[in-house]
Image 1 (cartoon, helix red, strand yellow):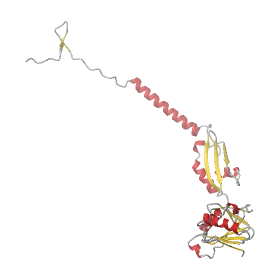
Image 2 (cartoon, helix red, strand yellow; image 1 turned 135 degrees about the vertical axis):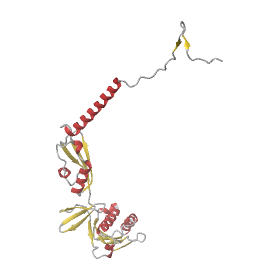
Image 3 (tube, one colour; image 1 turned 180 degrees about the vertical axis):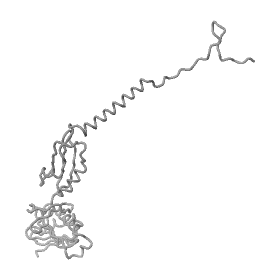
Image 4 (cartoon, one colour; image 1 turned 90 degrees about the horizontal axis):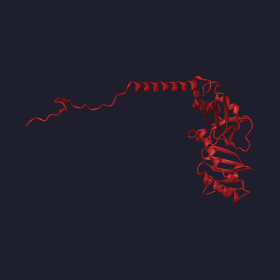
Amino acid sequence: MAATTTARRGRNSGTEEPPARSAKAPGPGPRRGRLLLLLAAAAALLGGAAVWALYGSSWLRVESVTAEGTRVLTPAQVEKAAAVPKGVPLASVDTDAVAARLLAELPRLRTAEVERSWPHGIELRVSERRPVLIIAKNGQYGEVDREGVRFATVGTRPRGVPLLKLDAARSPSLKRFPVSRLRAEAVTAAADVPAAVRGELRAVRVRSFDAISLELSGNRTVVWGSGEKGDTKAKALTALLKAAPKARHFDVSVPTAPAASDG
C-alpha cells in the first residue's frame, strides 16, 4: 500500500505546497514596556510628593494644640504637659508618646487621647480622676479616686467628699494587706453606702481589713466589717435606719443579723 502524503499539490502546477504555519500571539512590544516604565515613574513621583508634603513642606505642620475634658486642671496645663512643639510636621507627632507623657506628668488625669486634626492641629481629649475619699495630713488633703489611687494633694478640702481615716498602723493585717489594699477596701465600702445615706457620710475609718466603720452626720456610726457583701449590708443599713431612726449605733458587719442601739 502506498504511503499517505501530508503535502498537497498546487491547483495549477505539479509542485507541492509547504505545510501551513500556526499563528503565534505577539509578545510584549517596546510600546508596552515604555508604558510600564512611565507608570512606575509616575507612582514613584506621587509617592515622593506625598512624603514631601507630609514631612518636607510647610503645609501640614503643627500650628495649634487644644485640650478638652478638664475639670480641675486648665486646658493650658494640659497643653503644656503635652509638650508638642509648634512647627513640626503633623505626621511626625508620636500621639502615643504624647498620651503617655500626659498621664505621667499629670496624675490627676485618668485617661488621655491624642489625635491629629488635619491640616494643622493636635487635639488632646482627657478625663480627670474624681475624689471619693480624702486623707488629711498636715493641713493638706490627699485625694483618693474610685480605684483606690491617691492622685493629688490639695490645700482645701473638697466639698462633700468623706474623710478616710487609716488607723491600721498597729494592725497585724498590714502584713497581708498593704495600705493601698486597705484604701481600696475603704473605697469599696464608701461606694456601697446606700444612695440615700451617701450625703450623710462624713468619714470611713479603717482599723484592719475586716474592721471598717462609717461615721455619719449626727454622731452616728456604722460597723461595716470587711468590704465584702456590700449590697446586702447596704440593704440592712437602710432597713435599720427606717426601723430605728433615733439610734446612734448600727452594726451591719453580719448583714443577716443587723443591730441598732442608742449607745
